[in-house]
Length: 60
Image (tube, rainbow, N blue to C red; front, side):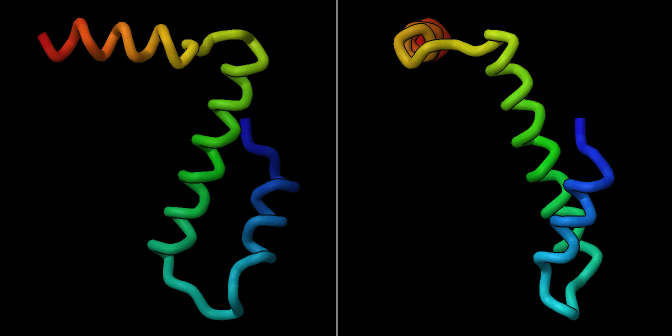
């Protein structure tokens, strides 16, 4: 989950002028990274080999 501190730090790293779209894109990316890190910590991820095997089954 995002924290206020991470959001503020992310905004501070942006240029003095930016569009709302740029801000939203940055926050979405930050949220996705946080979610994937949490999934990784909880071992809710697939290995490369598992992913390749799933892809083979999907593309049959």
